[in-house]
Amino acid sequence: MLLNDLPGSFCPYTFHMHRRDFMFGAAAALAGRRAWAWQAAEAELVVINARVYTMDQAVPRAEAFAVTGGRFAAVGSNDAIRRLIGKGTQTIDAKQMAIVPGFIDTHNHAGGTTLLYEVLVGNPFEVEFVTIASIIEKLREKAKQTPAGMWVEGFFHDDTKLKDKRPLNVRDLDQVSTEHPVVVQHRGGHTSFYNSKAFELAGVTKATPNPDGGTFDKDADGNLNGRVTDRARSAMGRAGRRPSFTPEQNAQRSRDGLAHISKQFVRYGLTTVHHSGGDLAALRDIRTRGDLHHRVCYEASNPDSWIANGIKSGDGDEWIRYGSTTEHTVDGSFSERTMAMSVPYKGIDPPYKGNVTETQDTLNTWVERVHRGGIQVNCHANGDVAIDMYLTALERAQKLAPRANARPKITHCTLINDDLIRRIKALDAVPAMFTTYAYYNTDKFPFYGEDLMKRSMAFRTMLDAGIHAAAGSDFSPGPFAPLMGIQGMVTRTGWDGTTWGANQRVSVDEAIRINTLNGAYAAGEERVKGSIAAGKLADFVMLGDDPHTVKPDKIKDIQIVRTVVGGTTRYQS
Ligand SMILES: [Zn+2]
Image 1 (spheres, protein in one colour):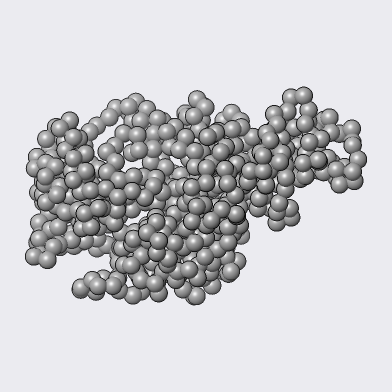
Image 2 (cartoon, helix red, strand yellow):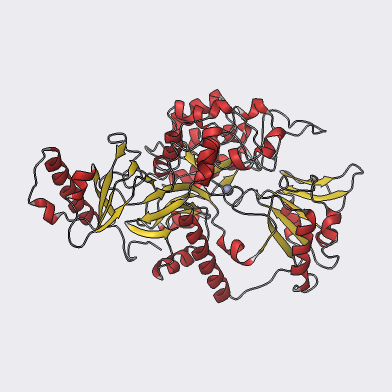
């Protein structure tokens, strides 16, 4: 299972060669001399006349850079870099375009198979309102091709992106079919909407009690309204039949789905994505066939198998690298309003503070085992109550088995307070926070109110405290477009024009750093990626406009002109 035998794996010797060549060249350039070594250091790729935002504190701005062996060989002025152009050099004149390091998304479910093969009842990538009638229509079409008794499923539903201005309910889905179990999955991944047949097959009635960590929601008359949250959904999932595929068909679907989403990632400027689990064999296959365009940090859904096989976070190579565990869930969802908070949700009776889906004892045991196994711990914790529980487990594990640079990951880390910030900093934990939500999900912020939004997705507070907050789109729950994320982080204004938690705004440069260098730090990769600096992997994005100078509410519309990974163009507009 180790990846060191894969083609194109990282060779430290090559790396040091290029680095030495560059350092010699750079020193010579500073002295204004033409050294004989320039010939030896002829670059494979040179980019000139650019506005390079390097995210390298030593040299924040540059005009040009050179690439050799898939890595940046030199970064500097047009004059200095032009000297590295030789007969075999590909030269790009950027015509004053802005260039930033390749974007890094540290939390993504990378569900390409769903995008490619399933019924999408909402828009995965952009803000778009749909009608309940359109959802019913799409699912009816699917039901026509599906044998009775088998699930009919819709994906990418967003309950606040409905033109009808009311929630989807069980009666709507009964219009799809009374013979098929029907489910519409919320893109947030924590709530689902079912028809009557699904409840019947699952044996769930209005008298069925809510299990721990989940609810069967009711209407005003006490009848099931169709919405089921978090852990109550497991009772529903056991009912009905699902299509079955041969192992070969499943492998093919995984490969094609991953190849499909890899194209989408580079189209939006992502050069590294942390995959929350998924089919590792399929990833390796599409890499071999040349369809893997972005670098993968692969997270373990079963860390015990890594422990058993001696695999640790950081193993692998520069294309498929072993990262943390997948998010071990401690509470519910922000967007679906089930995250565990210390204060009750507004306007809900009886008072509701969200779902804690894990006990402290179980969490302590799990965190300790993974931490001792040399694997980066990663839990999903949204609300302040869940983050507190997770930090308690981490503090305990670090005390029992201290380890430097453990960098435990907090997926989402949405609602914070001063005490949590102090403890996150003390642990050097890395929050992977929602980025596109500040633009995409403002329609959900009224459920929390301004007081809580001032402490939610708290990038300003995190940076001020010296915490390496990173960008985690959480696709499919959030769109993954980094520029949409950056716009939201800079403006805190959504698609609907409302502004929430403006105290958490960050500058354009800070937002880019969160989406690049901090993403590298989150996986212990800050020495090899995340900025445009000599010796690092040549991953960069050319932008049609400069996010520093366009109107902030137009950042998301900037065209991705070219995405380059390891010196090779993987996307061009
Ligand atoms: Zn997630």
